[in-house]
Image (cartoon, rainbow, N blue to C red):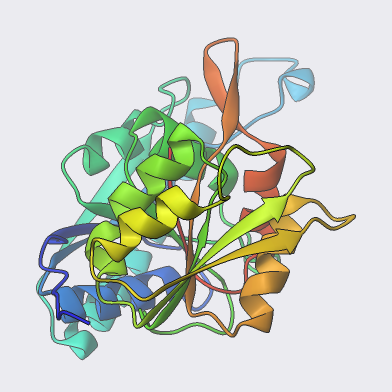
Length: 283
């Protein structure tokens, strides 16, 4: 196999968890170390979310100010932890706080990732839940349109490119994900293309197109059709990745528009919730 580098990944933004082990920042720092990329840590400070039905009178200004200060303080603590992670990895870092104002559709997230090669975000940890994590991921994928690496909250502390599963269904989203992942795919030792059998008749040899495309990039490719499960395509893909002891996965992010807002589709949400390996997604 021809040797490649992932020098095309030069600018990474990590969404820094406000608590927990901050595995996304750890993996992002390891990836930045491998690629020589600059790593920016973005900690989000959220306005307090107050259910409308609880509001019988105007919210006291003191409460709003105190909640804002607490949120910014939490973000600063998270960035101190991020800077320590970057120092340990021996990489150059930059720290930013993105303040989310009610009704801004996470403009702070979008604004900070417009010029980046890759965003890295952690899976929501049930023991240390992050505010609005699913909406943040939607903003990265659908509003900013940036390739996004989802990092599981447990079991992963480095980015190992060796064995990758590429989820393929011939869709534009899947094609964009492959293109976005190519700088990292070219360092893989083994690429497994997985197509979930959904009972549709496909013209020609299934997977021949994606297999040929990846082979032209000097990749060692195996194309496999896998059975669907009662748990759905997302569960089938994750089970296959686990059986093959894959290090990471590439897949298109699917969603649908409702009142001009993108929402995660069922398969995408299933993978994000249950992933036990890093997943590179692109819309």
